[in-house]
Image 1 (cartoon, rainbow, N blue to C red):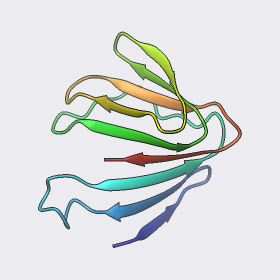
Image 2 (cartoon, one colour; image 1 turned 90 degrees about the vertical axis):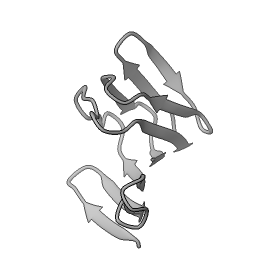
Image 3 (cartoon, rainbow, N blue to C red; image 1 turned 90 degrees about the horizontal axis):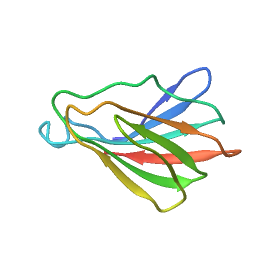
Length: 96
């Protein structure tokens, strides 16, 4: 299943939906311009896993801030607050 969702500053493609995995997980690819960042948030029912495919991200968790270059893999545990921000010219991110 490949759904593209167009937002004003970001493109999200669902590569594998939670319906396809009986609710176990979903895989989503995001493409966005520099400065795009969701507010600090948490997921009560699942962890959030990121793989940086292009660009560099700044990852924010409850107690850490660090940069994640291409190839970096980051997991934010279930219930922990987190956010991320792209600060390179372009980025692609895979999320599970």
